[in-house]
Image (tube, rainbow, N blue to C red):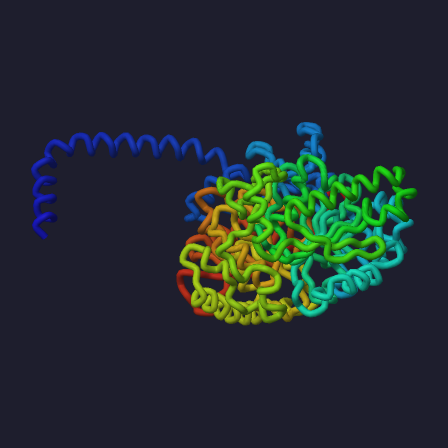
Length: 591
């Protein structure tokens, strides 16, 4: 108490000097407040001012957002074909993410196409969708001979064809399973399909217990990823160009390319080196199409047998140099396996003339958000003893087994992982009481916008849905744990738009995102992005501090969402749930 008494005595002694200055300060503040009130009274809050209101998050203001024009119905802000001319064509860099600056961001609601209907429910949606929901005739006309899809009346039908399997994907995957027995016993659980078409390969694998991320770039005509998601198949916009894919190292059990036309041996082999980075040790890379089976196929590829033989030999040499071995080959399919241990890489380290060389330690192997590709081999960490495919528990045991990489997360350990899983079981049960649509055919595509270990996805694994687990590029790196569990996900920064088309998710889940990102991201842009990617009549469950809940509800009303505030499962006063539904509306231009 002595320090406190001395402080107040000093304050009293100096009060006579401070008083005149204090009075002057009060008078100036009063005048400023009065003049500010006169000015602000003439200028009601506009949409542009939502960010200012949201920065304090104290007094919810009534806001509204205008409709975007109808030509923005398929708007993808960070991969916008209208902006492609601004960027270079080298290695198709114009198709990579190029997000608009703040002054150029759209502050309007993206309308659905004229005649949009609620999507066909899973599992029927795997084979058909409403034409008006994805009204693109070009892909139908160009790919009709390959049976990707065909238009029948008001619907697109998906026969399951593809460039290398025009007569059906199931027979193609059957052959692949004969070459890779690990596809049948739960060893292989996660896969990535580069250049996915309309994701028929990924769709077929779902029935075989394999969860696939289908990857394709934004295309002004084809809208491949939008077709995939409309069907209820996991997909994301992306391209292997100059930046790493937004996934951690050693993630996928299998990677696939069916005549995706990626020039694997060019530019120092960087594209294949990226596949190597994201493949788990012991994982498989599957290639069908040029130059595989060139002896019988070269005539249809507008080339010569000598050229294709040379291409195949270059590919084989490149794969060998980065520690892949040919695993199996038959007809149009060739399979290589990434080395399951580091013996091969040790030889690489001892060879000063090796090319591509081993990467140095200056670039973290999991760094994958706007991280440049480099022509070097990312060697798996020797301290990881149980991350290779053979040591990873088989599905579904791996879902609840504590991953080795949880210890790489700051503060992470087996006990915390188990508690997180238990917590999300309780939360998911509560969510289903508040939103009975979870577990029904009304919800298929789900996104957990800021997950830790994929706990919600694990709790919902027996429901007819899949979850895209998103880990903030600014948060602790927990995404390797998500993949080690046999789940899928991606890195993302919610200050930017997500790599997907409009109207592609049935349910968005938010857990503390606005609290954790409020110092970086403006609430209005995050919620406008949520509205863009949420399907009409889709849902959002927003779990936030009581401090933010009212402001979020106010902005949601401006998005034409209906929301209700609910208690959490623990009935905490510090945390609330908003259960919201996006309304279906049509552009006023089409009325």
